[in-house]
Length: 516
Image (cartoon, rainbow, N blue to C red; front, side, top):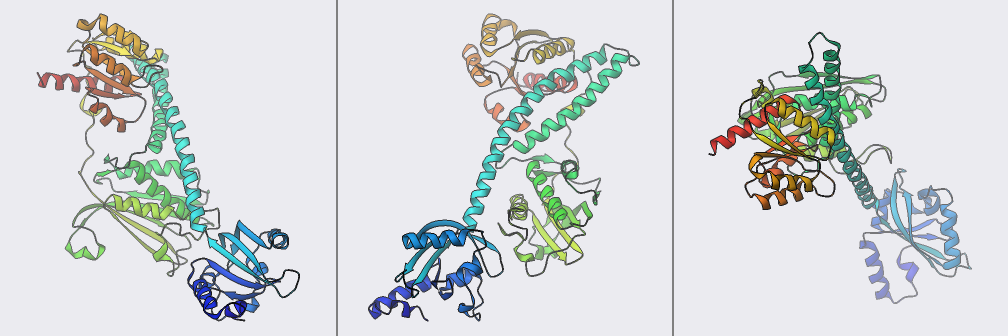
């Protein structure tokens, strides 16, 4: 039976216009007998249900061929019996290949429902991609909430460590090297250093800056990423790394590069259900005109290779693996966004990613990223080894955490400076007002209750527009740029040790001296 036969009682020109519309509409339309046997399917239905064009329609039943959810067929039939129609039922429909699709289904009875002559018109819209986007958005919102919580936890964690680390150092300084107190202080330092790493990883994962860049060493990111995922890998999967010792620096977002590597490692894990090996290699490479086919600008690059001994990728789908939402995993096991994220991040860093795979042998990803300097940039800690006792200054410390405030005061006094202490922004402003001529610098905690660092800074500037303020915070160094824009003379990230504090102060003193 053709589509026109179903509308034979209508004027011919009206039937033609209606059938023409049904043929071109993007939503799937099926017309069935009363028992669900297919009579007609428009091109969109053929595509969505993946019906071969040479397959007889009457060999398919809309209910039993495409609906696999228990009880759903009965629900649809009951609705049609009671109402003669079905409106906006969100459900899953399975195509010929048994791949589920999310659809919104509408249906109408055509003819007299009391007779066996009636037909049913089914209209269904594919919302699979919309659902995936909704799920990803929901996941993103969950991650944002977790990120806010984790960021706060990391800040509080760093506040605690800011009191522990300097106290341990002061105990070491005041104790003989062979004493029990000295040994205990060393143990505390080592444990606190490990805790600092954990807090910094939390801050790294929760940072949300679109174009954040810093000088990074890819080998460090690889080691950190392996540490993060190692516990989630089965015992029969091992990671072997071969990292170039002379690897050049990258100007990149370390969080995003960590995401790239973790995605590739987890992708390799999924390709090796029976175990195997993941190889990670880095090296310096130079691209010249001979490699123009790689679409890379001539220059120096850092190359990272991630190779597995897994099942490999079939040739017919290897061109699709970087497409958003493309996945070969079961429903609920993957979003299809992992490799597209890898591709996007590498592109955003002006790099290229290449893939080579052989079924049954494994897959290899090669990533090229533009290289920068040859060596790690020197840090203030490595530049400044000696204790600073010169340039006697006076400091006002404003911090609501008593332990942090007091140990910072002890360190400054140990370095030969005079100290004033205030446990809140309001008290700090009052103390500065009273001792304006005696205070050279203010060390201000940016995260305090009631009157926070920004509000306190605004009040201090009312008293003295040229006030010299050093910000301190348990948040990561990516906030440093913001603090500079506020006119601060320095930034001290918690937790800190005596050496780093001394080095930062020397840098500030030298800068102030140069500006005189």
